[in-house]
Image (cartoon, rainbow, N blue to C red; front, side):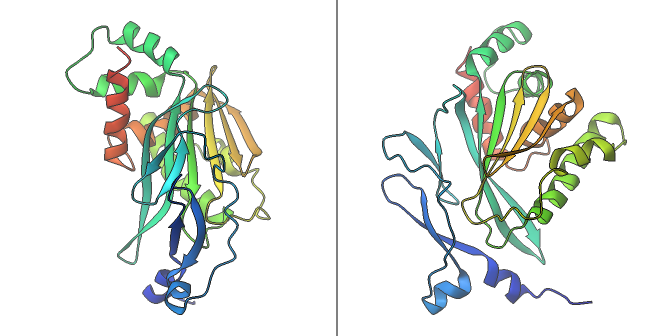
Length: 251
């Protein structure tokens, strides 16, 4: 069986050049290409192009996220998803967490009442358990990521989150509905966008490069997905904390 060396993984790790005004990725080069002075041909056209749109920059990747979407959802926090492979912490994607803040304001006043001094577990749990409109926008920064790798990552992370809620039951059938419709023919490049949106009524929609690949009505699935970002075992504790601070501002 062929093995993957540390050098091979490092060679595939993307180095992103940033447009100074907007923070949007301009082009991606692997570490190997950077050393050799060779430009990668990666298409990053899916990132925000309008310099007049206010954006927030995820500092560890330089990825930009518009502070407000056409749908009205507002950006509450940005963060980074990393994965350890052979002892190397690789940056996989930057992410932005968006929400219908007016509905969140109503939810918090109903469930929590007065604003606490700092973000609490009860605040995060109220958001996780609700069906308030929310979206996590993922912007790929890892060079060489495939749909198959994304599908495996979803199965592992979301599967573990479902088991935590259900007391050990993974629910494979429900898991397959999330990324099962994503064709392996979809090519992911540095800057490709994946959006996972929770609509009122506990509907979880997944879009890959503007293509809807699934739309599933499931309270369990919605809770499990947002628990990965707002629960105790979150991918990025700093992003969770920033989201919590944004919740405090809504009281």
